Picture 1: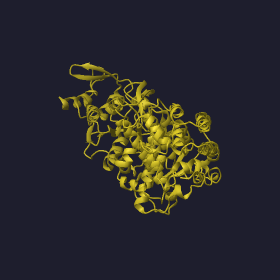
Picture 2: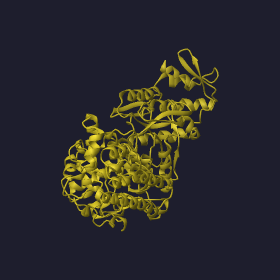
Picture 3: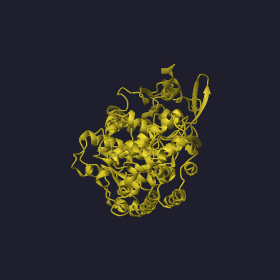
Picture 4: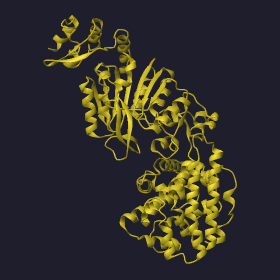
Length: 617
């Protein structure tokens, strides 16, 4: 391509508005194409930093054939550029794995227009098409803030491609500067070319420092866009001068792909802080409002900075979610995919409870607060909710979400739950905080559910959900008092399909006298024994009748001590009224040990306690 054509309308990228132009919006597509584009955006947003994303898109997705067709069409350049970046990343991964190219061969192929040599980046420079880098850098094209608002994850993909390209060339670490010495030795014979090449590392470093210095706590979109335009102008200017000096297009791109940290920081700078969701639309399992409804029309609106939320709508059907200012799976389920992360089984249980006059819900491992917000959608002010989340970023986002939507009946505690109080050492990975998973070590504050909810003093929990990545048995052990007293109705424990964790959770619940069902798909469902099922609408109506009768009569057994008495465990330290209440509390006891906890007041068992014993003899 002639240099004059490459530099055509060279100033276009430095002026203009942040309105998303046609090549990045791609509206009015056929239905299948539009669905594939939405899915592509969502997957890139959620998994941009996952090394498996290119293979998923190019080979393992239900829309893979449509994605590959994007490579051959020009109707939506943004879709083609996105798949090109992913295809180049996949090729770099496989070349590196197969050791098919040396660093020197790769650099030489890039510097001389990608002729013979590795195939990794050739897909980005096919003839008769506008090249992505031309649009972003040396030619005409949308401003970088406008590109970011197109929601294709372009700058995140450039960061990922940079990582894979560095690995292909044998670089050590991010932005190692390995390519410039190689080019100086083998290819850059002209002093003018070398001068421009040597300017780039310092330019990238200065712009990276500027991007990282921005305070994202309440930065408005205009201020963020202004910073992005500043770094855009400097990189556009450098790339044009580099081409004018005689550097090959491939060399310019290769040098820019040393800036992985820069591209990642640029992506983070322009990410939205909040997303507005139409909850029926976000759940995907309910009857959604018509497309012309205000709820649907406002679905998936993005906001930058708290000051921008004045334009947001908040009610029981629409909600604002705070998300983290960086690419993270659970944040980008909301921001990029515009959907809530809440198990269909939890959703089914909440639907079963939606007509109840009151509902107490405890969510352990609450992540971004999605399930609790779903509960508030179904139950509104009849809900009382407590969420526990160990990761500080998730906890802060969930607490902010509850506050922004006026959910004063919801509380968030930044704690992990286990079998004892103190601190828990676990690992942070893409799905959250867990035990026996590969991730970054992290120590977080912990407590037990018994201690955390000690203020309930005889009140009852209608639903307990546990999503804690292999801490399930520990959480149940730490709730032993609540479970033995049958103060929890429906218990849902997710063990993510691991048989050993599933069986451990089921054994704990059985040991506490619960009936257990649902040992499929990694989900354990437990309830106090009854004749009305478990965790469905008949169960909750029965449970709340039992709860109402017990709440009026049963005091908290605060002075209980347990002693061994032969084959039984004997409870001592009751007052007479407490003992009568204990007999009533365990009137449906399924095991001798639970019955035996009603045994004695000093040495004089009450008649009802004696009757309880004789029935189990």
